[in-house]
Each structure stands twice: as structure tokens, then as C-alpha cells.
Image 1 (cartoon, rainbow, N blue to C red):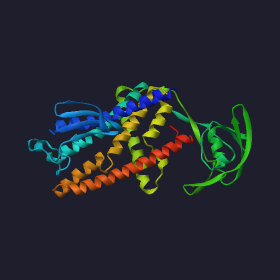
Image 2: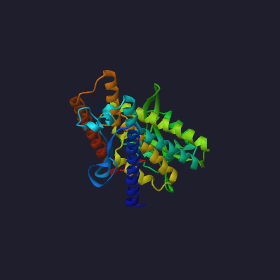
Image 3: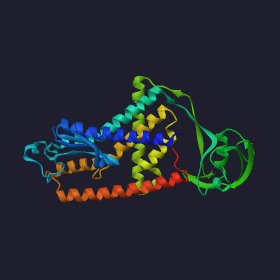
Image 4: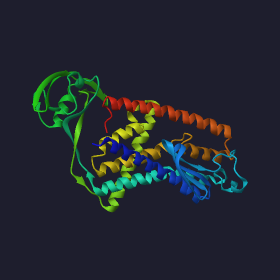
Amino acid sequence: MNVAWNILQFVLIMMGLVLVHEAGHMVVAKWCGMRVEKFSIFFGRPLASFRRGETLYAIGWLPLGGYVKITGMTREEDVPEDVTHRAYFAAPVWRRIATIAAGPGVNVVLAVLAFAIMFWIGVPRTVEATPTVAQVTADSPAAGIGLRQGDEIVAVDGQRGELASLRERLSSQPGEVVQVTIRRGQQEFTRSVRLRTEFVDGEPVGRLGLAFGFREGPPESSSLVGGFADALDFTWFVTETSGEVIARQFTQPNLDEASSVVGAGAVYNEVADDGLTTVLRFIGLISLALALFNLLPLPPLDGGHILFALVEKVRGSPVPRRVYESVSIAGFVVILFVGLLLIQNDIFRISNGTLIP
């Protein structure tokens, strides 16, 4: 595994996703007759730039995203009289929303396309659980007897069988001491362990505190139409799941359910050599995550701009500049704070080996 080459690939993927996102804003803004002053990949002082027409194209030194500068993003902005009619604030609300939504929209389209190609090439359609341990929960009964990733559970209380029967024996003995036979490499050994009691639908069940691995079946490719249908279904599934994760952060915060660009890079380093379909899945997931993140109704994200446009429509008058700037600064601080927490969390998980693709 060439880590440096994988990191370079990841950086290029992220640059490409930012490029298409910002290009979506720019193209629709120009289509709506707005004046686009600058198109930048990354922030900060430009490392390279050129001008074409009235737009300056640049690559900044700070790799934290990108932006499109459209004349008149706020009504109090100093705008030359000869271009006032082409300012963002002068456009109808629907044109402003279309311009802002175009960035995430392009990322969603790209995600669907990546998923469709993945299904056309072929992905496993069947998955079955195996008795091999994939993960051990800290401070669990499994951890207490030294179970580790790669071990195989071969018997419970001396009774061998398929995984389903082994799991049934474990779940049917909450709080009881059982004999677990483990295969590690070419050796087998037995350990006594008291199962943890958990309640599922009000009923007690026995738990070892581990996750079993899975075995995928052979790849199966989809037809042209079927691939698009599968891609749309998968996109909706990811969107729905992501929405549930985001909602849980407000009630039961759990940083292990979210990652920063550091975590995404680490995951890509692990999966980059797993084949084209895996890379396509990764690109689609990151592109979709970028779209969903930007649609959060929090300035200065795209969702925040859409929210302000709707508020202006309801109020029938522009949002005061001081309100816009104050809310944008607060939003930026929140995003920066959460981003730093996620980076710190990802670095910790990478260092202790718990960041699993």
C-alpha cells in the first residue's frame, strides 16, 4: 500500500468534488444573469490565478473548501451602479435559491452517477455473517476474556454449529456463565465468561460485546436502467441514514458517528486498493456528504444562504447587514469548533486503531 500515492489521490478527489460544487454555483449564477467576480478552489491568498472575462479563477493556499464570489451577496455591499441589476440581491428569490442549491445539487448528481457506475460494474448482492470477530467492544465480556479481531467463535458450551445457532445460545443466556470455544490461527481454546444482559423489546438477551464479520457473495452487475434505479435507492438510503445521524447529534451527541476530512482520508487510504467499485462508492459517499453538509441551514453554508433568501421572501424586506454578519460569524465559529473536535476525534481513533472503514 503506497500511503503517499493514496493521500495524493484523496486530495485530488476532494479538489474535484469542490471544483464541481463551486462550478455548479458559478454556472447557474451566470445563467441567472448574476456577476461572478471570483471562482476559487480553497481559501486564502491565491497560489495561482487567471482572469477570463469578468471572473478571476484561483487556487488558494488553505485547503478547506472553496467559494464563488457573486456581486451583491448582501444588500449593503458596495456595488457599482452599472452592475447593480446583476447583483445577487437584485435577483428574484427563486434565482437566488437556484444559484445556491446548484452546488449541492451537482454533488448529488455526481454521487448518483458514481453509484450507478458502481452497480453497472457489479457489486455483491448477498452478504452473510461469519463467526469471525470483526470488532470487540471495550470493557465488554469479550474484551475481558481476551477476544480480538480475527478470532473465530466455534462453540458455545461445547455445542458446535452454524453462527445462527451459536448466537441463539448466547442470547438465550443473559447474565449466565458460558463456555466459549475460540479458534485463533491453528489453535483452539475455551474460556468461561459471564454474558452481559441487555434488553431488546423489553426482553433480556445475553451479549458478549462484539461484532461478527461478514462474507460477501460474488459481484452482480445491473442493467443500464437498473443501475440508475439502484443508485437512486442507495442515494436515498444514505441520505436518510445521514439525516438520522445528524438528528441524533442534537439528542445523543456521539462523535464516533461523524468524521472530518482527516478521518475520510484515513478511510480512503484503507480502501484505495480494494478495487474500482470501492473507490466509486467512496467518491459517491463523500460527494453526497458534501452536499448534505452544505445544505444545513447554518450560515455561511449554502443552506444558510437559502434560509436567508426564504426569510427575505417572508419578511418582504432584506435582512439587515448586521444580523446577516452576526449570524454568519456565529455559524462559522460553530462549524470551526465542531470541525476541530472531529479532527481531534479522528486523530485519536487513527492512533488507537479504532477508525474502521
